[in-house]
Length: 134
Image (cartoon, rainbow, N blue to C red):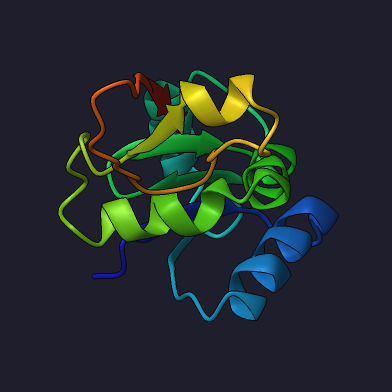
């Protein structure tokens, strides 16, 4: 079963945009058409707390609708969320770890902000670790 689940309805432009975005990302998903299966709409509402479609999950984490999905993509978080879901939805993999070397920030070297963990061992270096939930 694909890691992405999307509740949709026929003729929904936001559903089509979500499907197009996921297709462009090379993703597959399980689609639940609440128009063809009206009983599934109550399931969607219970799971998401929302009544509009699409409603999208990546792994066991609710993304929301198309605008939420598009926002993840704009921030560059969609790939990380998909990657974390591909590892069983491990919440630790669903966090972005950034390490900023304070000496670089103070000296105007542009800082070392970026995805992943960057390390430096030096007697006078100070590191700040920021955990940013996706």
